[in-house]
Image (cartoon, rainbow, N blue to C red; front, top):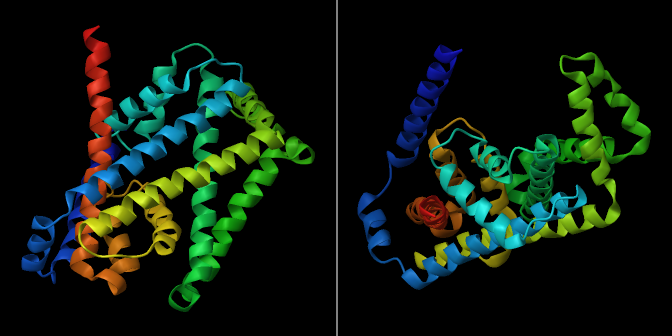
Length: 303
């Protein structure tokens, strides 16, 4: 219902304001201003290019699933679709990126196209969870109290993969046929189940690790741009956690959650002001990359 959407959006705005207030209330704004005024632009540009490279590799992973389903797309075409969807996601609700990607693929064989995008997202989540687990082990002294939660989340996702791809568990999904639109739901499951080939799984996992590493390198160079350093390992292991929590649709564009993640994970190494500045610059680098998609939308619209 419309009123529920309105209440939810108002709640998101309120939570965004509250989180930003809590993060900014004791901030040294003079130091924050100094940090922004002395950003080393070359490092920022390299960071944005690393994010762009991550999107490029994402196009290969997406194409891996589409090819398995019999679709023939050039990687450059999917790269263009991804960038255009990234731009539109700035103005769409959470999940808008994936919806836009499916729309750009066209209306034919829609279930298969949704399945390819779903699997693309699932492997991304798996890579994030593994990075977070490794980050937990890397800094067990500081994060030990969260160990049980992280282990449970990782176990649940691995269990989901096992159930989804194992032949012996296929019968568990027969219940879908008893639900409304059950035949269509079970058909989608069968499509997902078809991705269980080892070559697909191995390639998808490798792509996923490289994608998250590219996003992490964006943050690594952005922190260098504010004349700080969190180290390659810390960046690689902890940025995926930030990328995960900002996908939770409880604030506007992840504001407040993203900054809180940067402060929580990096303030002991670079200070709170530099952590906040790095968070905002990270968002800005992603937004700049998305503008390329906006330009592509204009180009194809004018043709």
